Image (cartoon, rainbow, N blue to C red; front, top):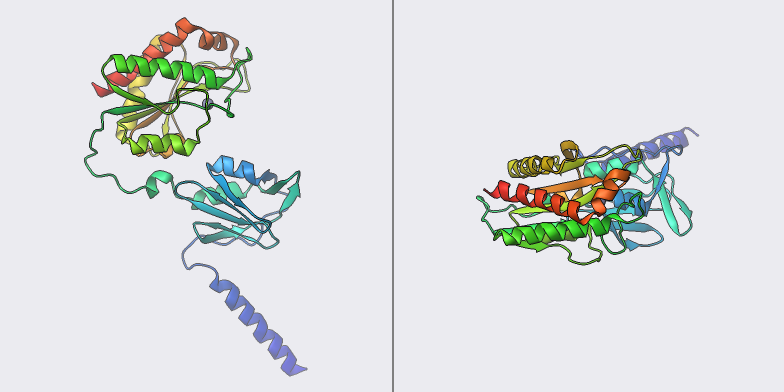
Length: 308
Ligand SMILES: [Zn+2]
């Protein structure tokens, strides 16, 4: 009896020792369990929030990727979540419904904090950056991704393309070399938009969007740069913001955000939200060709001011 107790004690100690071996010395702490009461999210939505696309879906695990990260989620009980081969937490409760796999929402920030930003993973650019003389204009959304719906019924992807095309034309007329990420109503991954700018070693990447908000009274334009934006991105944002103020729209100034087109581009990058499709007044302006010209002129002038 006594020998058996000692044996059990020894086995317990071995089990503790083995399980603690899995924990990297100074890596992320492996959490024991995700609380069951947490709100759930589909793995598809989780991927969308983290800027990842599903690359493999098996009964035991799902793999999500972007250019810098591979996230593996083992969807079996006690399964681990790996970010770039490092275990970061257990998956917790896994539910399946309607062909979708649901996991705890709390995984989103945990995975995010273990991910590498695509720009950080990219090979370091040679300093000083050689000028390519190319500006990339990105019309947000397109194809199966319509973007926001305006209160007047039309979709964001169309306005973005119209204004972006006008911006590109105006810049070309000023003698600048311009490349658009899309010139028609087609879908392009966010990652690919940034990759286009990186491949061309663009001197500036400007993404054109139209905003939406639950409250219809909200109006005005907003300029976005990445949280870790370079000095050049900040200068470009300032120039475009100044020029946009001449459109007569309210300004929400320059703000920072984690948009993938901004974090994925190696060179200076700015995202312009032209105005609110959810505001009746601005939805009408954004559809009006004369006002679209005014907006395009403001963005193009801001861009050329930045280069001068
Ligand atoms: Zn948008």
